[in-house]
Image 1: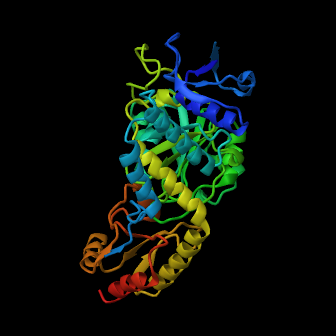
Image 2: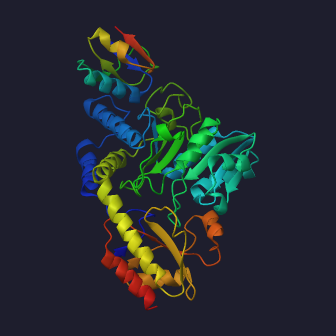
Image 3: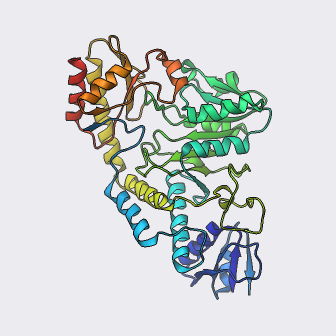
Length: 62
Length: 373
């Protein structure tokens, strides 16, 4: 799945959070589905990831 | 050459800063927040790491809430123009740099705000008394410099910040002087916004500064343009921080700033101990020179001071020092309020601003030159 954010800064905050939790993830180009989101997003297969995003605004694309 | 103008810019940067600048230019060299290829992603990651290094250094509860600008002047203009509304009142100190005074005075001339200046004699007031004397029903902000760029006096008071913050007044610090010399926790001290510049005490290079936003108070961007996100929108997106950073960021300088802050964090004791020792030595030496008057000598300070001589104007002193290989600054120092406060508008003053890499031998050379004038 892809976790997409409005802010590029949030992408790397998410990456930092997931790295600290040893959740495997990768920053990749955002799938072209919704132009509202920034150009990169977090790709991960771990469903737990989306529960760790705190107060960041995000969307999950599957 | 002896360099005593560190309050303008620190001339000698740590090797780590120069290496970081060099690394970014040679090995990365692309802009963050633009391309989504691997190198562009790495640039964006480096930008995020730099933001959080700044935010942690200033004790923010969310260290990524930092907007990068080209310097503290731009950061101050961003906040004042983006936040203040018609009818607002702002309190500042008599030691504010023109970077704070001018944007406020411009807003005043346009009939948007009014401001009051805390006098020199009131700087020792407790928070309650200060509030009672200066705050009005429409007071929106207390804006203070961390330290005077003229005399080196520390103006910022945590007690004031906490109290005004508790009264619902936005608190702001201009940390251009003293950011690398004092420890501040925005979160603990009730500081809502803080402007910083990279090229002075933080040992970065010119062209980078920013605004730390502990408060979630909304404000408008200063400039419109490309943000790397929401390209379909005809105006900047209302997204933090990108909506406030239109245009390509100075990423080499941002990466170098991160190295500068990390250098300070690992050498803080050495820097502070050395600068206190040098400043104490300098002030003692100045006090022994006939016809010399130094200002704010008994105040808590950073490693900057200023003086006047009875028999020589500041411009002539600067020329004399320059002829002996000493770089110092005379004139008004972009601080007209401060010169009014200490009574040196007509004469100007000579500012000596030290760095921990200065030496007592350099100070002796200065003192000898002044004695033999």
